[in-house]
Image (cartoon, rainbow, N blue to C red; front, side, top):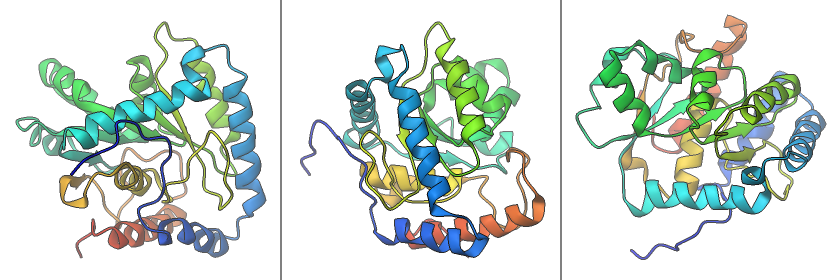
Length: 255
């Protein structure tokens, strides 16, 4: 197969991955306008930044760089979910598998022995975050791991704080922006998905990574993983059922 040398947009691999976002909003009683306002505020905040590497054309370069690393090289990819444990991560480090972390799940890497921890960090292609992942996300930003930052209706304070922290780093990470509205927002992408874990899968399939090269680690729908951000457990379990549905559509969930 011949691949393009650049990728400029993240079109969802299936339209239903975006359509489901409306179903999620309806289920929880959330207002689409809140998601839209957060997204518009985020794009304005980022494009007002003094960092040249976060300019729109450089964010597009960052996306193309990930495309080349993940798709053209035909890498296997493991997504670290919120229930990931160190032994699961160790099991993939003997293979040339790249890693994508769902927000705070990156924290598991720091629980490994130092030599394995550094090996794992070198494999992290990017992190997917809605800015509530805590220390795992912070460490990824410190290490300049590229990150997809997501805007939704009630995380404006969180993403603004994370952007400010990232700007203060000597080597700020590459940044790509995502939203969850049906509208087209120049400079942002909606590859589909809802939680950080299933959105990571949506990003990979939108990039062109085949689902038979994607492995889900620490991804459970029956318990709240210890790397989940601040959450109400009952609502989180409901959210995980939506995650399960989205992963099932992509052929990444086995009952």
